[in-house]
Length: 357
Image (cartoon, rainbow, N blue to C red; front, side):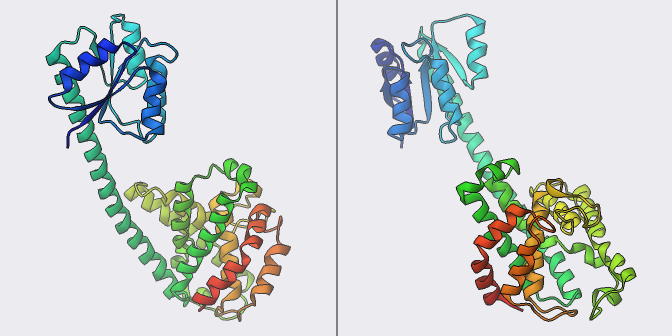
């Protein structure tokens, strides 16, 4: 199958000359002005391998057209070669700033046109293949990374005699909460204020698995004690947040953050016991000074702990857990996130029913 080249020029003879030059190697499609070119790309959804674009055209010039092309993720990687009679350096540098791959003079030297076009098509194809390879390798590394981190988290759960489904539940509950937040229009402003994107939301959900990694550093006598901890024991238990932060700091130093979510792992591990009213631990942060990821996990973790049996308590009912969380709105928990929790509480209950300890 031959490559397709879009030729954009308001002068008929120029389009005809270029089409004749390219006909032996390429299929061509023509547009007589900028708006027609954008119609070809965005209304007809035609995706050429390369674009030859005139600069000086009525209505919409080449600089405006290339900005639209480079602004759209579906067309931004298509190489654009300007065809122009202009010889001033300012026009050339401006075009390159906007993303032009090269310039072709309207003298239309056959060898120059073919060679430059061929070179830029080959370069674009190579870059696309390289990006695809990098994406594949990154995905493979991320899967390995995920498995390693989940192994750490599972180790903590077995040591504290919690079911291995706790990781799965907190992850799935977090996903329910954040998906509702990001898809309901009334939370649009809140989402923007948190700087949330779909990618960050996905990373936060994956990062929840290490929220209690610091419990590795807590003695069994405290971690496994049935019944209420003494004040001194509770002070020791609280240190699991600091320990968790230090463990993940070590991971960051050793591995960097190539998987894109270790920073969220640290936020969650270190801050998930902070409270909205500022009397939590370990740093007594308050309100939106607490990282969003930790505020989110805080509600999920408390709900899951309440409705499941622990060595120090029997399980609460879903209704009891809901009452505790809603009464803590604006005290322990972010008010907005409590509102979202209430909206998806039935889904929380259903998920816990399927995965209960």
